[in-house]
Length: 320
Image (cartoon, rainbow, N blue to C red; front, side, top):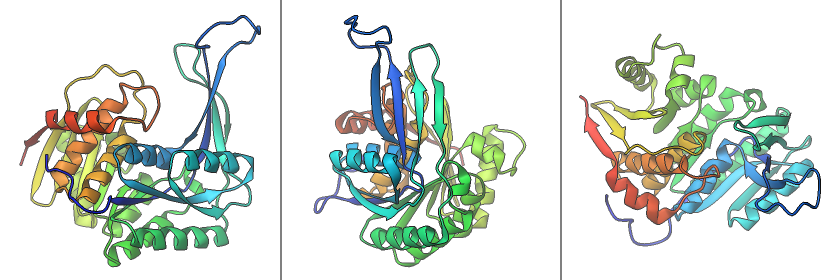
C-alpha cells in the first residue's frame, strides 16, 4: 500500500444529520453486591455519521463533523465529541437530538427505549447546508452519511450538498440508502458506498448475487456515480467502476459484533482518498477497517497501526 503522503495532516469533513446518544447497560465488570440492580452503564456518541467519524479519527486524520445539536442529549453528545478531539460545527436544533437505550446483558442486544429525533425545520436545514458546505471546502474529502429516521432530512438536501461540493473541487464519498442514495448518484457523487441489502431496496435488481449486484452498480454509474462500492456482510465487497469490476476480500475473522463494519469501511475509504491513495488502495484500507471493527466491542473504534498492517492482507481480484 502507498505510504501516507508527507505534509499537513489530511482533513475529512463529515455530514452527520442525526447525532445520537447511545446508552448501554451491561453486566458489571466486577460484582460488588452493592445493589440488587447492579449493572454497568455506558454512554457513547453514536449514529452512522459519528461512528464513521470515530473510525476516521482513529486512522489519524483531522475530523470535522457538521450536524444539528440541541436539548439535553445534544449537550451531552457535544461534550463527548470534544473529548474525542473532533471539531464540531454545531447547528442549533430546536427539538433536540435522539438516542437509544440498549440492554446488552443477555445474548442479544435488546432495545429498551428509542427516542427518534424530529425532522429539521426549514431554517435548520438551511443552517446545516451552509455549515457543511463551507467546512467541506476546507477539507480533502466530504463524507456524507444518512439520517435515522430518514425523514429528518429530505433526499434533495443530500443531492444539493454533494453537487455543490464537487463543483467546488472537493471529493465526496457518500454512504447512503434509498432516495438519498439516488439523489447522491444524480449529483455525480465520486464514490457511493452501499450495502447489498440497500441495493435490493433500490429495486434495480431482483437478487443479491454478485452478477446482479454488479449489474446494479453499472446502473448507478450510468445515472452519475463515479464509482460504487457494494459491501456484502461476510462476502467480498464489490468495487464497480466504469472500466472495471473488482472483488475485495479480507481474511475471515470471528465477529464479536457484526454491526458497524460498513461505517468503518466508509471511514477507511474516505481516509484513504484524503491521504491521496488511489481508489483501489482506499477501498482496501476500508475493507481492513471494516473487517477488524467487528472483532472489537465498540462501533467505529480501531487501532491505526493494526488496520494499516491488516490492509496488506486484503485481496483485490479483478473480475472484469
